[in-house]
Image 1 (tube, rainbow, N blue to C red):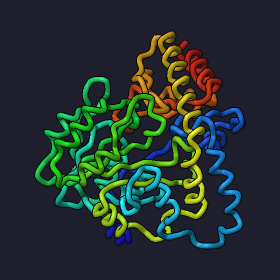
Image 2: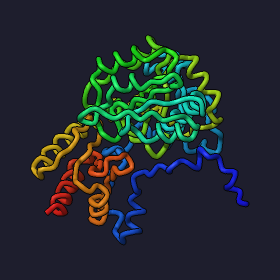
Image 3: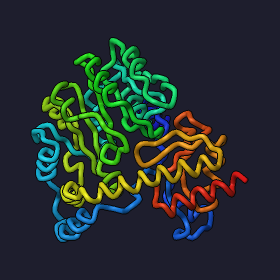
Length: 365
């Protein structure tokens, strides 16, 4: 008999999440110079981290021997002021992924179900499996958009959570503002709607008025992150905004000291760095145009992305990803999202985008 005979069957059923491969790992495996590799796989910032966040961390380094504020008081208040909500409506997490897991702790179990799109962020499925909830995966509409009407129709008597990623990862597609707001108003009030807006600040099309939706519908929870727009992916800092009663429930499941001191300090400072966010959005808009034009010249189909990434149809996504890696360009295969013909590429700097296009062209020829 093994100790694993008693392993939680929900844990046993999980296929672990596979992130974009680090530069150092690819360099070791392929015998490449790390400095010769570019990573366009994980939708990280193309312009580094917020300078204001970096300076705030430098000033806080002498205090890292202390525990962080377990309630993230300063950051919570700054987020509340930034979004015009009460601080009781804010919860911070170790990345927005932790907020999604807290939703599972509080609202999902063996007698419930969760609704989400088939090609949406895989963590919705992982969280549902972890807590034993039934997964209702809804096929996407043409163009790899969320089919909101089908998602509404899929809601069952046991449904407690509906996840909507917008802009959607990994497809990069974004929903019409009025359509999403109409959808939110049609979902029954006893079902939690999780609007995962990890890319909201750098979205290249208008976003819904999420804060108004929270005020109007107490069953709405908005998830955001500092990883993308503010370039703080390595610190793992995210947050949720919702009705006080929903946030209070999530706080009960949150571990003490779930976010570290430097992450709290950096995130608080980053909220004042609007210029950095605007520069990122400008770079991504230029990158989107550059890649779309280049892919058209190569005769490749793609899904227009409205965040800082896009899907490219190459036939064998896994095979092309491996060949690009061998040439020092890391992208993301999409087989795990049931899109095996595609790879996902992050918008980098103009020079990085150019290298991706030229490398892809040489491999295709």
